[in-house]
Length: 104
Image (cartoon, helix red, strand yellow):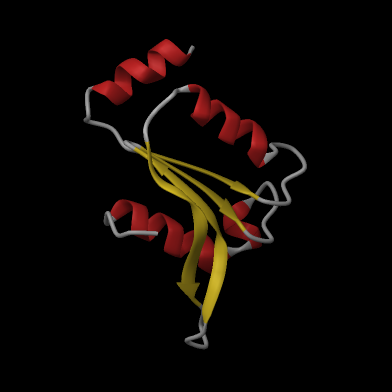
C-alpha cells in the first residue's frame, strides 16, 4: 500500500493533510503518525505546537504538527473522532491554512 502513496506523492502534484483528535479512541493519532513515518519522507518541520487565534483574540494551542515534503500531520488538542464537531474553530483554522498554503 505504501508504494501507491509514494507514487502519488513523488509526482509533486498532491499535498496531504492528515489529522487526528488527540483524544480519539477510534483512530489513535500514533497509528497515523507511524503510517506517515513509514513512508520515509524527509521531515521538513519537526514536531511542534501549532497556534490559532480564538474568538476572543487569544492565541490557543491547536495541537501539534509535523511536516514532511508533501504531508502535513497534525493533532488537534481536545478533539475526539469528529474533530470539526469537537474543536470547530481549531479545525477551521487548520483546514484554512492548509488550503491557502499558510504555515501552521
